[in-house]
Image 1: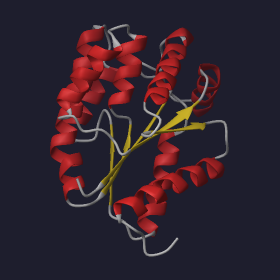
Image 2 (image 1 turned 90 degrees about the vertical axis):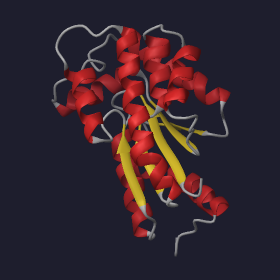
Image 3 (image 1 turned 135 degrees about the horizontal axis):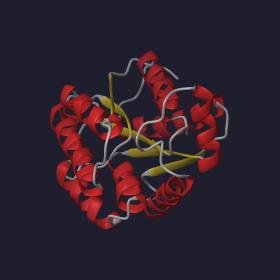
Image 4 (image 1 turned 180 degrees about the vertical axis):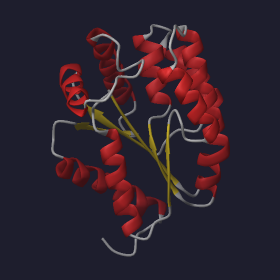
Length: 215
């Protein structure tokens, strides 16, 4: 497809939202058309599913949880991501199928391969051009979340062992697909991370001939 699809991944508190916003601001400043999304919640339906899967009181079985994420992904890709890419836009998204593989496939022990297959089916086999993994250990992530003073959602409330499994799964995914992943130490400053991300995105822009007006 003519556009560019960039996703941010990482454990809770790793700074995905911050770096996503910084990247979008930079791209728009260069004259690029950017569509911003997130999972779950990139669409009106997705916001309803987000409320269920992250904030609903009571138990949600692991398989049901995985399928809710897949449903959100299917709708988001079909109604927003693919159309934007077809228009030649840049899509910057906070979380995608790698989150499902790490959280539900590995940490929930549903099987990484099975969850990946369901996710790819839901997304009609759409993979990002670049996945930026902000790597942070679970203790540091917990400290950052605590500093915000906000209430934890269902996944943030899981034990440290759960989040350690999520981190390990992410690193395995990155090692298996080094051309797609950019792994960065989330302990670096916002500015340092932004420089590394911009350099990688610029190389993709050049390759895709979506070159900005200036640098």
